[in-house]
Image (cartoon, rainbow, N blue to C red):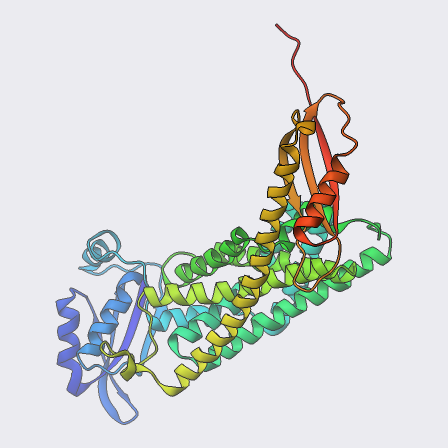
Length: 431
């Protein structure tokens, strides 16, 4: 429930009260004087879903909202409050959207102090790094719970859609610096772990499943970032609690940032590059999908009026949006290039593996799975391909690895290290 307090000058009192009466709202009037203007303070309770509708109606009636306070209250009992709740919560005018003023405040109130923000970022990055190296999904999920990046991402997005340059700068810089701190923290922690012998320095980090999932920016991984941004916008722009949305946004950012640090600590550029591309693309996807959702829900810059879009475009808002769009296009283009290269490489590997297994020599083998290591643009490291096949019990296939390596290297024009894992087929002897 929301409590609205609105200062109405005497010469606009009749218009304001007429709007409230038409909406069936119970109100209290208190005589006030503000900045030398006589008027009254009108107070009334509303369901959260009704705030934007009522404030918009007051604006259309010519009521200046330079002094308006929207506060949360536990409950309210007035003669017609049940009718309002029935209309806006359960009835035909049901709508979870909250007012522009409230969404701005909610975004700002989500942002913790700088010390808290960066301290929680460091802790979440360390936990994520430990979870990746231990190949523990539970620990990785724990790092997402304490990550604070949701505040920066949504603050920047709200600033873009409401044309608040200060919010844009605060949100985007906090997000960029936060991810930078996460990468550096993960690198330092991973380097200490590796140097101290806690994890063998010779371990193949690309063989760790949790790391593999963050160094290959496939389409499904990018979809996570898009959905995270959209969910964050819906959570913030409606009466729905936004606490769980922060975990979703962290899913798309923190583990990948930790994978960048691990790749740097192990001196593996393909791991670091693949994970960094995923971080950059997901961060951009979160911002733009959130912006699209806010726009779809009807949020516009202050002073926006219906009609020609050109009449509503201020030079500052166009400049801010243009810079954001250009940077976003650059990042998404880079991600698209890497993603396209990876998809083509993966398809080529899958095709050639099936071609080899179609040979009469391997007629008894059944392909179970093909796992390819991501190789970034400009990285000449040897690519690793793991082929899992099912074979008759203990049947030897000494030429399979060599045949796969030769075929894959000819097709992809890269050095390829092939690992074949056999799964022996068995049959139950029970009747």
